[in-house]
Amino acid sequence: MRITVNRLPNRFYPDYKRVIIRFHDLGEERIRDLMLKVIEMDEVIASQTLMQTLREFSKRHRNLTRKFKHHYREALKIVGDTIPGINEISEDKKLLIGAYFSNEYAISSAAFFNPSIVESPDQTWLEEGSKRLIISFRATGEGHISSIVFHTGVIDKNGNLSFEQAGNYVDEPEVVKRHIYDKAMIETKLREMGVKGEIVRSVMQPLKKEFIYGELLGSALEVLAQPSLSEEERRAVDHIVWLADSHYRIEFSLDTHISERVIFPISYTERRGIEDARFVRFTDDDGKVTYYATYTAYDGYTILPKMIVTEDFTSFEVKPLHGRGAQNKNLALFPRKIAGRYAMLSRIDGINSYIGFSDNINIWQEPVRILEPKYPWEFIQTGNCGAPIETSEGWLVITHGVGPVRQYCLGATLLDLYDPTKVIGHLKEPLLAPNEEEREGYVPNVVYSCGSILHNNQLIVPYGLSDT
Image (spheres, rainbow, N blue to C red):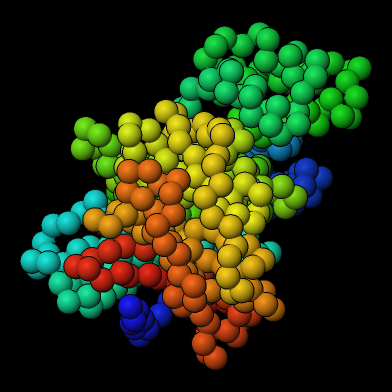
């Protein structure tokens, strides 16, 4: 059977004009010196400097003074309230101090790639046969730090795609620490991370079976106050706090367009990037729809598989995944339960494809190998390119394979609908390989996707070009 692949003209490119404003940490000594300089400024000059700054940057950011005020508070946390006169300064000087501890970051100046695609929760005001879509991208900026951004579009009954223009601003969410932690789950994850010993017991023992972030932080600070702790023990306590930090909830303002929302690294475990989010529209047994995304958190040294949960793409909950089946990269959740259990693809050994089943969406054990690199185009490794797609013939999985000269190609696998541990078919040749134009980029010879959809019997596969 011949497979026809049509490359559509729709393209997205890195855009250095899309910027967010971030806290600029200069270190305690320089923060203190700079605060003193502003405190000593003439009030008129301070106000004029602030007004000039607002004139230059307010067109580029929504609620800029609120961000300056937040950065002022962040700087104050670092130095405390020991600076003479800090509590008596004017509102203008507080905002000016916040401006000095701010910097712009171009979220997609380096690369814009590895998209996934899902049906939007908003399907109003559409022509018959059309669907509104949400496409997520991995945006990479200065220092090669990755974040998640979104675009929206519509696909009509004939498969024609059109995309909305992105909003004028880029906004980060408010971070809310409301998570209730499960003591046993945290202890299990710490063991998986190799963090163990008496020091872990010292931090965890005072806590109840369920606890909040502040209770854990209080216990950790109490242990850190002990002068006899070794450097290794202090690092272990830091790891406990970092793991807790990896659970968080974020909320965007309702008056932001989805294209203006960026999920930028927040916790320590992902400070160097949020990589390759695979979104899926999940329908539970009772018909409730929830959107999940698995992604790789990267701290510059190690990775941590994590999951995003949302119903509306306005509020998101973020948490780590646990268990032997949630190791390494390449996790992709099935869009519904199978025989009453969650199912997820993985690549725990970095080479072969696995599947796991679980009663708890956050804990994955005993993965089963289902696919090994079989053909020359995928001899180095194989993996999924997003959530499986349900068809009448079985679960369609878009795959990727790595071959000679580290060339990444896309393939396809069909799994049994009722027992997806069984492979029905696997393409002998790539579904899509980089052409002469697509092979050039930051990482040459790569086509890659993090999710596809089926629309009117047409497979729509958004893909990234050479990590560019």
